[in-house]
Image 1 (spheres, rainbow, N blue to C red):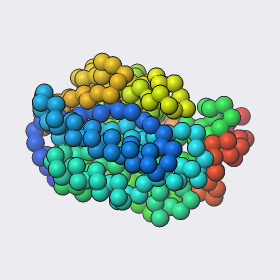
Image 2: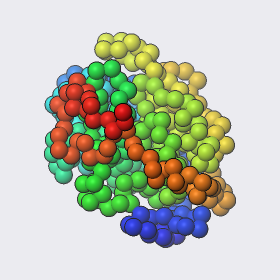
Image 3: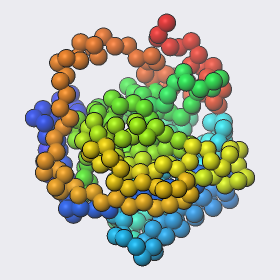
Image 4: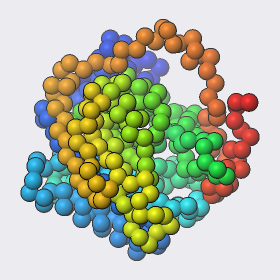
Length: 347
């Protein structure tokens, strides 16, 4: 393992390199699972969603075509689905990590000898009253390797409501105090390479910062659409691998149309070109080879002419201040809208 240089508690080198763990193999196969996102109306529906996810894991190894995936990657909410729930309703659909659901997923990781990444609504006893959106990475031994919080939600975009899930930015000071400054922008150094997971969209600065810290593979989740240009650019501008996994067409008996921003799951290479992409909006497994050893041999941090930009960024004021969900957690989407209304620092 190469060790990082630490500056203010942040693992980051100043010579263009970055910290790594020893690789388990020179090249590996990423499997992106474009699957349904079905709103769980009750415990039985949530159990059916989990059973479906486990079945898709098995299916990924029973195709008989192509290499077996070393990492299977699912979208934001394969277990709970998503709907316009209140926070109390969402809390009933939250899982714990570790918990019964992750134990069953871990058993599949051990059975097939693969990594599994997926998003979920999560409750954490260290964060009572908060609903978290976390992407989790489980190793082939069934152990939890990483839990990456969503970095931030968009604000001031939706008509009449805001998202109430708690992100890192919403409790930034307490998060850094609890987990350390380095965990604010997390990079998991694994035998498959340096991996960062996120459901954040349209925030190029986030992925730039993660690449500076040494992220080599971005695993990005979506539900209900994303911007292809945004995802391709995060690969191209940082010269890394970037996968996006979105939902397939929905079941008919939901609150939404069957095709609600479905499809488009893909893996992009460091040149921004698609290595593999879903050719339909239905449930599908796409496979991509990641030649991590040869990539790492030539890869460096992004080359940024920071001295040009530093004066502008140092004077910049973000639209909403951090820590807004530390004193108060909205109880539904509309309450979040009312709470955040008028809190913009921009005029």
